[in-house]
Amino acid sequence: MAIAFTVVMSWIFAKLEQREIRNQNAKAIATVEAEINSPDCSLARKQELQVILKALRDERIAYRL
Image 1 (cartoon, one colour):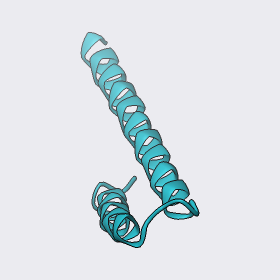
Image 2: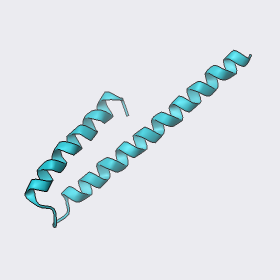
Image 3: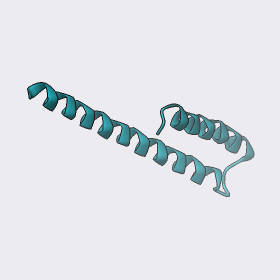
Image 4: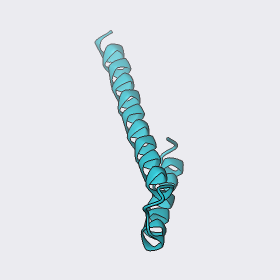
């Protein structure tokens, strides 16, 4: 019984951690997209942000977020 409880609790904690990572990734993507769409953002900065955005989206795919 104790082993089953430990397994279930470990699974729950892993899912909660995955959800937190997914939320942080989504917030980062939203922040980068907002800066890209800002009229004050220079072309050079937009290019930098596009690289960051691609990395965040690739991370989302790689970790199945």
